[in-house]
Image 1 (spheres, rainbow, N blue to C red):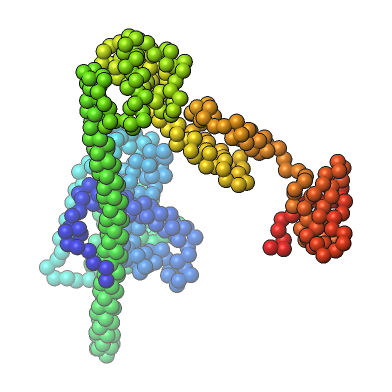
Image 2: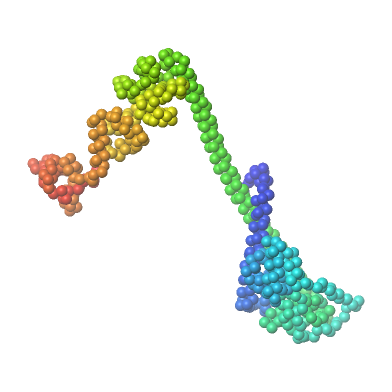
Length: 534
């Protein structure tokens, strides 16, 4: 059996549990309305006769006694009449309890709608008390007088005040049959109720207080002879035992049903907790990833601060000691070239236009990039616009610190771009797709790396691009096979050794041992060889 830790199962949230309770009762009311429609079908089509029941009342008392029997069914049917009579406003009546105080107005639909409108005016989600108050405003109800029945000291057989087959009328407004006439055709089952048969054939058990005539205070009992009395007593005893047995079986069945329902609820709660646990676990993973990202950002921030400090130190060094050795920031080769050029630039009031026209011969691009950055730092430190313009001329950008920094970053990746592109072009059988997969990463400095490549390398790039835009045609050097599938040469391999214009000369590999090794074919008689023999 699946178990959970105690601390996880006990941590219930009030909001979720309260929402679940409301949803459960809403579902109960919805299914109760659905049951009303099915009950109406059962009564109107008299389907209960198929099970051997004499009337609708007997069916309700036998089959639906667990849910309140015939009395509860009458209440639901009365609520259905209210909802049907009120029309569009019926959607605001959520259950039978809210419809109960409105039942007495069902014969007057206009007053019924008026009462519902009054209840909605005071409360957008009215309850049972709101509907009762609204109904009392529309049609005030007089207080009901309690009918007192005084039982005689000595019970005795009395004749019914209302004779059998007497006509009676339902006088209680809250009763579903209010105002309808019926006939008493059977003995009363008790002192306070009568069995009334209405015009549509339905028999109902109606309280004496709901009728317009008094009823029989006591039922008439029949006397039997002693020999029948003993048999009746034995039957009653046996019937009592059967009832006890059925009651016990019913209790066991109800207990089993309750246990099954409880297990289902526990299983549903376990699944809900498992889902919640899964969501929390995913949230924890996301939080951990976020923490890792924040930690990475923190490290980058520290490194950025260190780089800024290093740049500041370099700027201070350039400002204070422009002629000292820069061995910690550049290579020795760049240092020698830059010291000489920077010194000359400083002597000429940092006018480096002549240097831009004729850069250093050895590692020119890298030297120019470093010199441009150095001049930008000098311009920032000394607030010298001439130095900033000189850096822009050297790097080939706008004379702004942002443009110069962006251009310097582009030139910094130039050596790597030239190395990668030359590596691809040096591969045998290089194609345009292979070149483009590498070149598209450096598209922003295309003109720069093209200037670094040799003429042979740029011509190769042009050829690859042109070849990629032209369809493949069979020519000299193409590996071909015959295009006719019914020829033996369809699966053989040959090479085009000569182009005669309209015809091609093919040397077949399978004819190496023959004296005649080639044959002439029209171009449409051949196809590219796909390697069927491999």
